[in-house]
Length: 211
Image 1 (cartoon, rainbow, N blue to C red):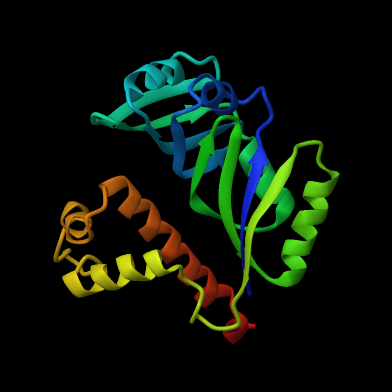
Image 2: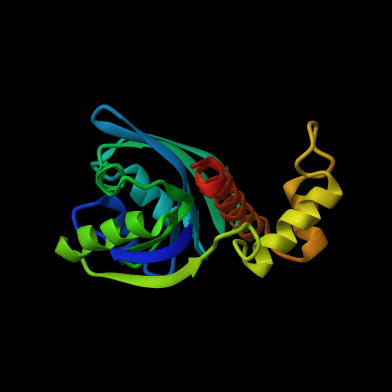
């Protein structure tokens, strides 16, 4: 299996391309989403010095069918929304790979991680080479075993969460407590955990041991 990180230029007509260019110092983070007929239902964050301004621009964008702010803090806002922009899901279907959430968008570019076989990633690069959109391959890591699959930061968060009972039911600690233990902010801890979990699940469910 191979894990890769890509950075791709967004088509200019997408709401997130417009707003991330309008607010170049903000991060628009897609935490989860799925396509439902002609729209996409998504859960996303805005990370910025004053996220409320970007959030209001999101709310009023013509592509938004519905919009609800779930949480709002000094430098972070969490919202769920329905949008008519579904290009990301069309890209996923065309590439035949599963994108690992979260997906980060900054200043007109989005970054995401993928895990697949050499052949699958080669097909993806061929697809991207034929696309008019610029892209960059940020990293490529070959992993024949689980060892080396995680970054040091992902391993630290996951091991600490396991030790403190974060993955137990009910939880033995909250995300805030886990973040405080490692002296990182909640948003960063959540992102690192999600990416680490996604890499482990992709390796376990699609790796050589299941072929």
